[in-house]
Length: 361
Image (cartoon, rainbow, N blue to C red):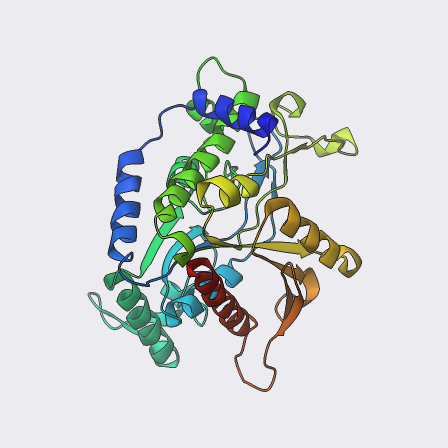
């Protein structure tokens, strides 16, 4: 880690406020890791979903990263089938493991009232609901799946990030899943501090939690994997550049300057969990630059692999970029209900096995 990045991280941690429920989060993580650290058990941290960036101090509008969470949820199921234990960090409202075959509003669409006191599953959904409940409960009860969702901004920053692995940025002021009062920001802002510094606290929470999870998994060495599928915001709006009140559409074209979010992937790879198998994702809309950008990310952040996917074809094909080759992974179109995550996870599991073998040589 270069000195400038090190100084930036040090200053972040020195100014960090106490993390709420830090001990509880660490206890859950330690219990989960201890339960799954026996023998050759592998643990993967899957991050899933997108992040938002507020455009106003009293936020009405925001920038939202496109992500349904499907990739992370589907991959979690396949990692469980492959024998992994999973720390699943996801944005509330996005796809979850074993629920992909259910309607968008399963509670209202899958169930019906039989009388004033009882409900039952509607026949068209009975098998799907039974399978989802059975598989989910088996994974959780067996100690193989630790899910860490968030609803409020504090839960997002402290629980998600405390999970580690969530490569979500830090903005959830108004994400459509929670209705915050107009003065919500001022209630959670640190007294006497500017919003610019508050943004730094948010970043710091994320990095602090990421570090907590990474350090928790560090004892597993090469048996640990980071599968960073979450869509993390690359930019945010500084407080000084942000309107205090709702931006008025009658004011004409909107001109706004965004600042780049600090990157912590290289620190994760080289210091926090240096022996772990790390996979990041690169999404682009321009196929001409996709593989070059993935190559660049591979080298810059010292990833073991980068999954390159183009927006329009992401559900059909991805390219796994390593330091020695580029492997195209496609959905099996001859199989009904197939997805690209199944062969992708199989490939990465094989590569992880090779990585473990080389590490133990």
